[in-house]
Image (tube, rainbow, N blue to C red; front, side, top):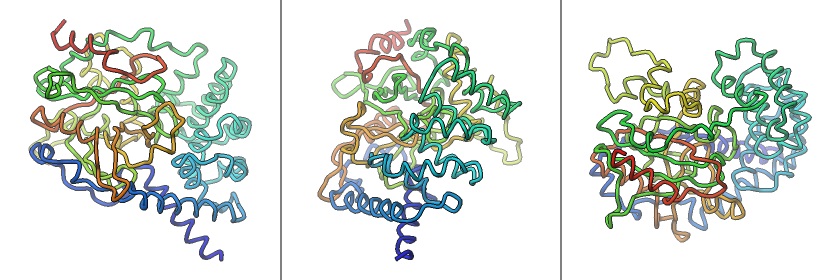
Length: 451
């Protein structure tokens, strides 16, 4: 019996690995040309996991693995599967109480486990049990000596209770555990949240039209992903061509599509698998994910500063392989922004996320069944591991793509004549509703007209 249980648990561990990253280790296809992108049709794409049979098989396999885990005596010292279980519960939106006993057993000795295990379990706690687990997480804080894991624990405490006293306690712990915190990107971001009065960034946001009109790097198209501060509400993607005009639909109306920038974890953008960070990315053509939950529709290959070399970011590859690469620094990143936005702190998030080692934050489609999240404010969208996600509809009969906002977005980007460019992610405000064209149309037209 236990041999078969072990096989099932190994399977869920493999699925957990695939749920974290657009790629699962296999090589994705070469980037597509503009002509190849423009020739694509939804019927060219198929994702077996989206068919009724395929989705049922995937869900049943994970459910069987979960039941096998629950049937196995839990030993916190030897366990390797709890991270996969927590990821599975979050993905399929199952009852979090199922794994709560094992999770709470794991917390007291979590600091003795490998760092990756710590990160995954703390992420699951932040996602599923923040309020209930707050006392156990508080007791764990002094033993967390790696910045990422400490930051996840601190954000979990804030999710449970964001008071001035709580922030003061966390700030004391952070400074005690990390005397050199000012050199660590995740802790730099955390410190802003732990101040007695955290900054009210949106109250000092510069004029949106300045950002929408900024050249960034002349001659390249830009995807603007305009979001709400509460990422549970979908944002809106628009594309500015290399001529400074925003892409239109065939009828002359503005091209704009909803886009979700929410991670399942709900963690900030400087943390692995957190929400899409605000700031500037470079776009390096198309890429195809091998992750089954993302699917075969081409993604736009967006990369953070420092994830991309300076040469990649500037679309200026060196012709001399012996030449020493240009070093990144924050002033170079800030130089892309219009003057009015250069001191706006939220745009620093992408810079800090790159320094923190985040990567593979792509603009992609989705194969997750949205019915798992029917009662969520972001329905019919599905949260991801921190990427920008557009809606796709797949045949329940055979998994063929029927309609794709993602394909439309990639084609709109290609319609500018190239697939190299930039991505800007910015929160507009804290209104509790999806971003609509009417919210930004005046600013878009003013930016386009140079006003």
